[in-house]
Image (cartoon, rainbow, N blue to C red; front, side, top):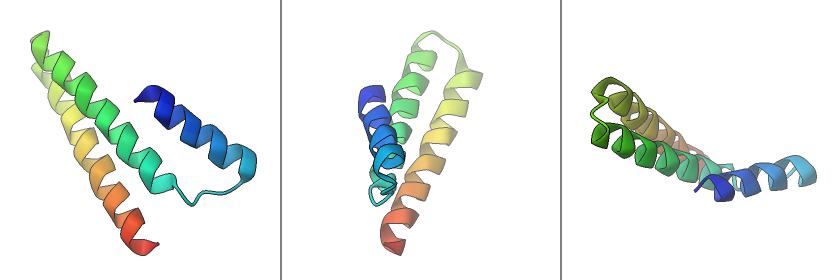
Length: 69
């Protein structure tokens, strides 16, 4: 997931084309969700919830960006 997000970031910065920013936000949110699940497995509930909340924020931001397009 991180490689995909990094690829979208480099593409946007190099070409100055931010048309696919909603995809970058979506994959970044998925990466946060995976990290949150790993934190829950390690029994770190506070940081797990933090990453899940970040996932929800990034998901809603991605959907909003896509609809504004």
